Length: 276
Length: 279
Image (cartoon, rainbow over all chains, first blue to last red; front, side, top):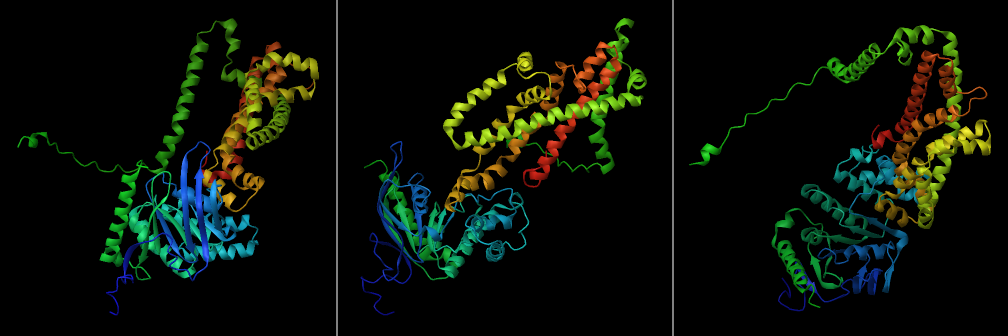
C-alpha cells in the first residue's frame, strides 16, 4: 500500500483509458505499426482513416467497434490480403498467422491433413509436418481426432483445428478476425480461456477482432475502440488484470467495471456516427 | 378464468419402433418392383388391344425370349455391337472431357476468356446436332472419327459449365488461406479448386455419360456401312422386320447407358464420397 494515493500512478488492477499510443511497453520491440493508415475502396467507400497505432512484441490487442467500422479491413491489411491506399503499415508477414471467423478447413482433407496444410504450402518436409501437426493438435486438445473429416467435427473442434493449423507456423504475430463469433457461449468461453493460456505460453503478438466486450477485456493487454465508418481509433484502454486470467475474475469488480467502461466508450462512438 | 376453456391437453406421442431390417429391405425394394410390374401390366393391356397386324410393334415376353434372348447368335451380336457403341461413346468422352476441363480452367483463370467463350458454348448447345450430321458426313466421311465427333458434341456442354461453376464456388476463405501461404495460382487450383469442384464436375459427367451412349447410337443411325454398333442393329433389325431383336438392342443400349452412368457415379464416390456424401 505504498504511494497508492499518488494520482500519477495507475491503480493496481482494472481497465483504464489511456492516451493515444502511450508506449507503455516502450522497452519492447515493435511488432505491428500503423502510421496514418487509410483505406478507401475502389467504389469510394472510406473504410479506414488515419489509423496510427503501435503494437509491441508479445502484446495482445483487441479491436472492438460497431459493424462496418473497418476492423476486419484493418486485419486484412495487416496480413497483406488487402492493399491499403494511404499511410504505412510495418509488420513481419513471414511469421504471421490469421484465424478467420470461419474455420475454413478443406472438407476433403482429414483433420490432420488440414492442420498440415499451411506447412505443406510452405514446403515443409512431410515428416516434420506430421510431427508438428500432431504436436499442435495435442496442444489445442484435438488428440484422437486426426482421422476425422471436418464435417464430423463440432463447431468448437473445427475452430480448434483452425487454431492448430495456424500454430504450426510458429507465428510471432497472430491475427484473429472474430474467431469465436459463430460459436455458442459455453464453447466460446472455453476457447477464450484456452487461447489466453496459449498466448501466455507462446508469447506471440495478438491482434484480435471481436464484437464481445468481455472477450476483449479477458484476453487483452489493450482494447482499441473504433468508431463507425470511416473507421478511426476512438479510444484505447489498458487492461491491467492479474495474469493468468481466471474464470472467477469475470465476475469481479475490476473486470465488470472495465467492461462497463469499454461499453460506454462504444456507446459514445455509436452516437457520434454521422456527426462528422 | 376464460382461458381454461382455451387450454387443450396435447397427449404425448410415443415413438414408433423402427421396422426390422428385413421389412426395411422390403420397403426399399418393393416399390420399384411393384411399379415395374404395373408398367408391364399396362404394356400387356395396350398390347391386347392391338389388331393382329400391328402386334409386331409390341413383342410379347415369350416372343422376346424365343426370337432374341434364347439365341446365342443374338447374344453374340449384342455383345460385339455393344462394344462398338461403347468404344464410340468412350472415344467421344475422351475428347470432350479433357477439352471441356481445359476450357473451364482457361475461363476460370481469365474472366475475359469466360466472356469470350461462354456465349459460344451456349450457342454450341443450341445447335440441333441431328441436323448437322449430314454436314459432318460430307466433311469427315463415314468412318469412326465423325461418330466420335458427334458424341463429343453431344457430351461437351455440361463439362466446362459444371466445372467452371464448381471452381467459381470455391470458398473465399480458402482462397485467402492459400494467398496467406503465398501459394501460386496453380497450386491453389490443384489443391483447392479441383477437389472443391469435383462433385460439381461429376454431376456434369453423369449427365454426359447418358448422352454419350445416346450420341453414339444416334450417330450410327446415319452410318449403316461397316460393322456398326447397337444403332446399326436397331435399323437393320427394323428393315428385316426382326422387331424382337430391335427390342433386344434397345434394352442393351439402355443397359449400356446406365452402366456408363454408374461408372462415373462409382468413380465420383471413390474420389469424394467420404467427405461430400455418396450419390
